[in-house]
Length: 270
Image 1 (cartoon, one colour):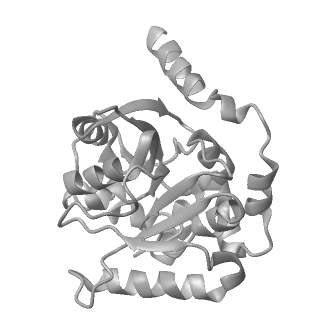
Image 2: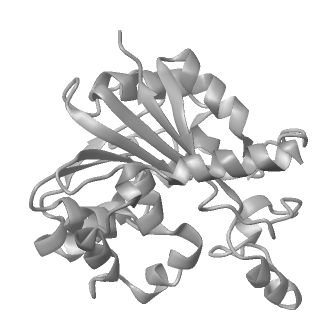
């Protein structure tokens, strides 16, 4: 019983931050906007963008770095929300002529095409790059309020994690913070490379070893239906359904998207 109470207290304290007390009409408007694709809106039930961005303290006048934005799912919300009073910096993969992997080049091209599709909304998004081979400068030192990393940590943890976190530390202003969402491996289950699932504590240890303190965690994006034993890892689940046979499609759709941790870290003073 004590353990249950402790878990509930942690969850409640994580979501009961002051920014949740007031309704953010501008953020609601960005999420409900007609510019968002129907496919992206359909995922709101799993990704909870309003609750997630509110938990991470993103205000309309914030300077925000979005790490490896993929096809722009969160950019679609953040760009119009920050357009008038804030600043959005999209840190993509290696933008050189010879990136380490083809998927990086393809991701950069896809994101650039996304930005070009609506210059009225996305022309003010600043584009930079974050590479894992070095401590790259992703923004002016000490200029960023928040760095957001959605479902990327399982990729960068085994590839230059310290370089990436140090670049974040350099970009953030004093008291700036990092918000991370990723696929969660149960703490009592062994790590399995290639599944997309990682342990919370592994991520916490890395951040704390590189100048950050954990200040919040939330179960907003938890999914207790996710058994995490899928043969193709998280990619068997929606929205990918990669490698799923027609006979199994309904089962994976019923599970929904993966169980996800949500962690908030603050930059320590030097």
